[in-house]
View 1 (spheres, rainbow, N blue to C red):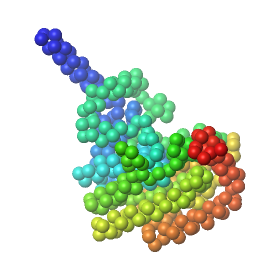
View 2: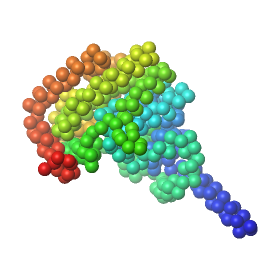
View 3: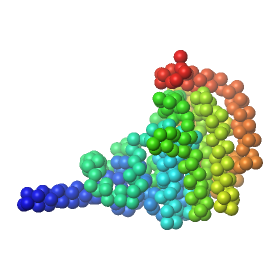
View 4: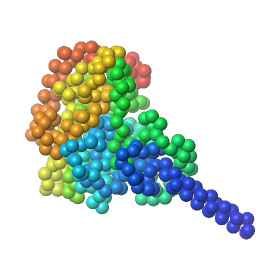
Length: 395
């Protein structure tokens, strides 16, 4: 009996010591308020920080979306000056994760205005969730369970040994906005970054192996529907009268050519029609106006910016790679969403969606005529990628 008592108290003391150490080091920046927004955080797992702590923090305006929103929407927003802004955008964020973050952000009236970046690839249910994604992060007990986690101890020890960000090792600021990208590394290397991005989308995001397909709904025991996730967001926003503003990201024209080379152009257009339809259906059900839905995708002066040649020492004005736009473009997006006079972008609705799709098709033909080398390179990359993956039907 004495042995069990000693064992119990020893276990209790070890657990208390573990919890105290994890709380003191706070590897995920979730236990104590940050004293400054000026310095980047040393966070061992950004998703835990943004989901467990930041999504439960009150703000005037919250941004949610994929890495395009994370990188392209910076913390400096002249159109929103004086407001408390938070970014819950994360790399590789699927629409299901977007839904869960949105639900947390608007819970108990913490956020009234939400800006949601919509990306086609995020609706592919065949994609595997990122390795650091965990449904446990949405549990109200997550802060407590992490105190007793061995993985938290491992991350706490790593942070204890290296308390300051090393180079680009900082996560973000306390408001969730990402550190500025060092553009010096891009000089002479744009072509490499662009093709690496396009290969990633062909390999993992648009047509992931082994199905090598795109699907809005998955099958099996844990079946999901990405369009149902979006409908749930719209329904909740209408019910709680959230000021929700949606936008389709303005990736580079080469990204849309990559999408087309994957055989997904018609699916992309179907997706846009569904965005409009779901938005207006939920508005009709709630007897409220539909939410603003802006399309910045396609082919225009922003997205058709010429790619510097290999080794050319010239910075691009609008892009880091074919997927990610620079924060200056993000400022234009936000200003447009809040009534700016810029004539860029199209507010999509039932009356104009088909005309907008046709305009993008026409602009695409002109781009292809004027950029034969880019088009040929992407089509070759698509064939090479499909062959390397041994997709069904590939010779």
